[in-house]
Structures are given as structure tokens and as C-alpha cells.
Image 1 (cartoon, helix red, strand yellow):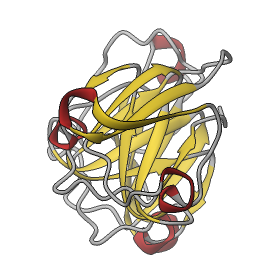
Image 2 (tube, rainbow, N blue to C red):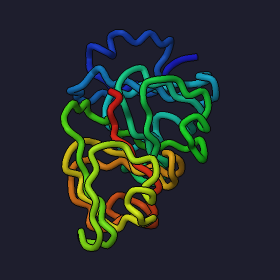
Image 3 (tube, helix red, strand yellow):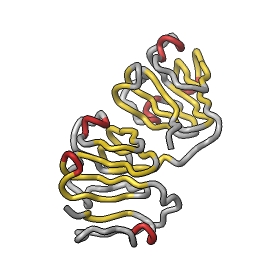
Length: 206
């Protein structure tokens, strides 16, 4: 088995021990302690590809992704190029098949580093678009939004501090959405197809 390529710093490239390289791409990397390895087959078999930076289009480096190993750091991986489609939060660990990251298929086309963050966490969710209607502020994880917010729908939100993951269903299940600090006036701003938010949590594992 060999690695087909790498996105990394020069120092990391020097440590690669693959027998051959089908393709190679080098880009500046400010955080070389981030590393994710994509494998075309289950159980970390077949061709593999290392990445240690954001990549908006992975399709030229592998045709499918059936297992992943996150060596360090946290990533979001995406079903489509340009950080679109189904998205999945990946912490350090091994994922021998795509069901382990709650994937729907073996198609992964882009990935993004989640920078390390050690500060406070704070967000506000709203019942209606444009920050109107009932509002509630949170500083911690929420396993069931309807129990605390008393609404199943979140039409807008303001992420004031930290990185967060929204989930479609309670108890951190279903489709995932990565949110960084900023204003989200409508649910489409965080790439959701509807306003249902079942749960959310802080990204605290780096």
C-alpha cells in the first residue's frame, strides 16, 4: 500500500515513507500538528492520502473514501467540493468504515481544519429569521434543543465565541453543521436545508 499524495509542510513531507507517490501537492501550513489520512478502502487499506491543511477539492487525490485515520487535531470533512454537502466532524481517532463517522456514502471531496480554541463559548439562537422572535443564549452543550428552547426550529443564530456543531436530531445525531463565530441570519447560512436543530455541542477536543 502507498500514499498517493500529501498536503503538508516541508518538514512533514520529509518524513513520508511511502513507496511511491501518484500525485503531490504542497501548500503552506501554519499548523503542522493537524493530520488526517484518507483511505480508499475499509480498514485503512488501499491507496491513502495525507492532508494537514484545508483542501477545497480532493477529487484528484482519491476516488472514494472508506476509512479515515485522524492522527492529530480536528477536521470537518465534506461530501462535495468547496466545503459543501453533508459534513462530518472528525476528532482524533480511527474510523475503519464511513458509518463510523455517520457517513451516507464513501464520497468525500473537501476538508477543513478546526483551529485549536481555548476561550469561552457563547451562542444565541432565535425562533425567527434575522435574530427576531424568542431568543436564548447558551454557553454549553445542549443535547435536546426543544427541551430547553421549547422550539424545534432555529431560524437564525449568532455565534459569539468558539466553534460549534449543530445536529439535526437530539443527542448529537443526524446531519451535522459546523459553525464558527459570526452572524447567521437564516438557516441556509449554515448550509442547512431546514430550520430543525435537535441538539448542538461545542468543539472542545483539539
